[in-house]
Image (cartoon, rainbow, N blue to C red; front, side, top):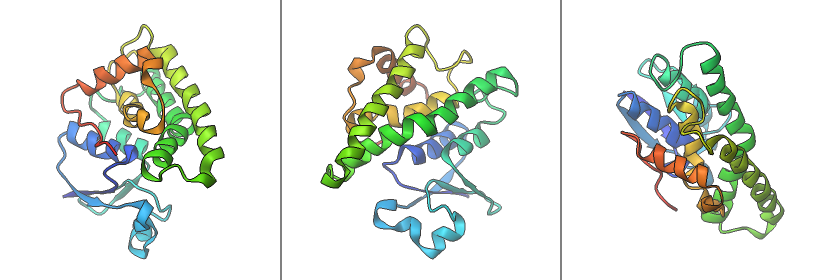
Length: 201
């Protein structure tokens, strides 16, 4: 049985479980909470020396890390990932952008506000997250005003990757009403067969 070591409330961990569900893979879930130190144990670091979730352990004990790489691995050969060529490159562009320009701000703001209670010593960091997160939503808005999906290939893992934290962005203080194209896209992704949204904090 495939095992996912992940945190239930994490958007990155959601990506792993969601693509497995969508591609028909059964899995066991091993709750692993970085906030309580679960990713710093000797046993966990033996699986992933980076000390990060999610970690997927395949039937043959092969270990996969990095949420967007996990998305791509299980989407291979399915409609969620176009075949090699320009269409796939467009998907990969969004995956790389999500991890560099979106997740570090929207996900971190959500963690600081909803799960850490706005710690005073993180005020400057939260302010930066707000500015950069709003900029990221603005990039998405420009694409999604007039387009149903992030690429021209229909719903792909690019949409799953960006949906992960965007659909709970309000928990990080972001107002999706200010980006109606993004808000409509969130509703479209949520309505796709098999999509399970994150629990709320």
